[in-house]
Amino acid sequence: MAKESEAVNPFETAKRQIDIVADILGLDSGIRAILKAPKRELTVNFPVRMDDNSYRVFTGYRVQYNMARGPTKGGIRYHPQVTLDEVRALAAWMTWKCAVVNLPYGGGKGGVICDPKHMSQGELERLTRRYASEIAPIIGPEIDIPAPDVYTDSQTMAWIMDTYSMQKGYSVPGVVTGKPISLGGSEGRGEATGRGCAYVIREAASHAGVRVKGGSVAVQGFGNAGSVAAKILHDEQGAKIVAVSDSRGGIINPQGLNPHAVDEFKHKTGSVVGFPGSKPISNTEILEAKVDILIPAALENQLTKKNAEKVQARVIAEAANGPTLPEADKVFYESKITVLPDILANAGGVTVSYFEWAQDIQGFFWPLEEVNQRLERTMVKSYAEVHKVAEERSVHNRTAAYVLAIQRVVDALKMRGIYP
Image (cartoon, rainbow, N blue to C red):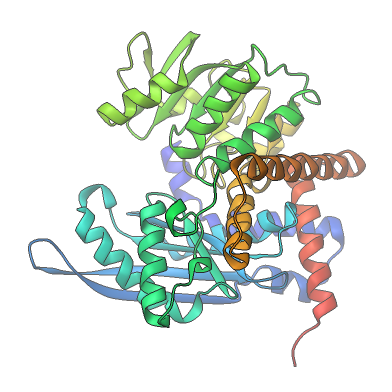
């Protein structure tokens, strides 16, 4: 499976998804060309002083994919395998994600090629501040609003917000989301992606003939989104978490795992591997586990034509971005496996990011209960709209979500027209 996923260019996948929907909507070649081309791309190469006083040059990217519906929005990831095409794809998916939950945003994404696991806090701060300085001309509350992603967090956003604010001469909390509460962050933002995913699973379960209460769940990628989704499904919906994994491997216990205890164990040891009372399972095997609900919450290109027929789950909820290739989608649809696509299932994060941005601009903040209620309303409504399109057009949920999202972007493009 590794060789197959490494060979896949994520931006080619993103463009193929656009073509599928463009055919359904009957879009002309001009509109197709606009939808398949990022509006703006910035590549930066910048030096960072390391702890041993040597200098290393890092490469970073920021892609603003489409601004028809508003300023671009999207995370920044730090990872050794970041590529420009990956960032392009993620920015495209953010465009559709924002549109499918009807936020007034376009999509953007950023990344720096680095290995944060082998960098000190000081090195990460210097890298972040220099990268923020390099992309500062094209970001801002009305232009492009970054957020955390893989191996970045609220501290990263605090450094970016401070760096941008120093250049402006006054505090600009709305330049990023996912900030600490003390700097204008929103209540509920940290768990929003996982919580939103759990809401969508709950809504979809009855249509898929699956009971969440007592149902079995496997989570590939027990990071923020995966662990939060597992906890909410366990605590609030009565699901049984039977398998979880992280980058070092996975664990399984058919009798159930307490996700809170697993999370505590991971924080102490650095991995879920070795959790008492569990047996080891690989990241490949966890995708094929006999469960009711599978949550891919790791990296993209995990579910392929090669392993799709081995998947036994009845519901797949994509907490990660782009974990399923189009060939696998076809297999799942024919097998009557319900896929909750990333642009819907993990849109809780960007939804509460939007709430944070709105609160920053107003200077008026909402309590956690209100944030979660607004998130639930948004996710429930969005799932219902996607399900309706899927039923009306006899397509699977990913295509339905894309039809809904791309139609909204196309409507905005046509209404605005082409300048000049």
